[in-house]
Length: 244
Image (cartoon, rainbow, N blue to C red; front, top):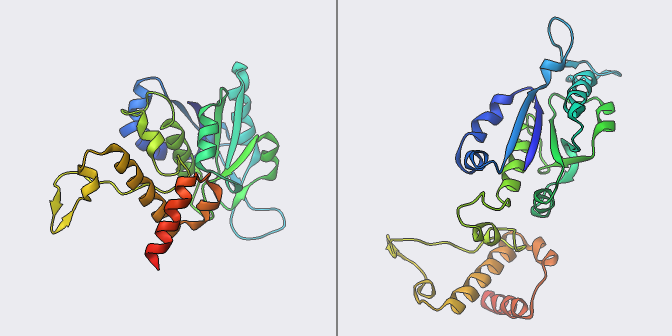
């Protein structure tokens, strides 16, 4: 994954990009992130990037000029870019979006908004507007990190075990099944016998059932979105009978 991030606070991203999987991916040249401070593209002695809104109202609005100048600068190399505005008004980022982004050949540009909003004219530069959820956060930096992290995990070689990304929650449309490790018993709580049985088919069925059970309990809305096999439907019926 290759991307440029336009932000007023590059240090917020630097801290996370220099840790864990993202750092290893960068070291392996699997992830390339360039950070640009939007204030560097502002004019005037104070490098002002915000102003009061026309029509009145609370808060300040992100000025268009610095963002336009920043994008003009990035496009000087002629490389194709997909410009993404991080905004609570955008389409919701999902695992499917992450998968689509992981296959994208263009370089991404993430614009991290701030203040009360961003001048509407900036949207004329944008290919896609994305939100990470129905809530408000201080700025787009955290949203950019969420997206970069989710996509990087899908890049071949970024994780130590390639199967990890396939088995994770949402990759198969369901919440994750329970995980256990040593010790086999801890404070009276035992690891389910099936997981130490060595029977791989039974382990697979148990994991699928527990993933379905958790999804039905916590996120029943996901059940309607996932393709259910005949075995899944049988398992769901068993779960329903157990609840009765």
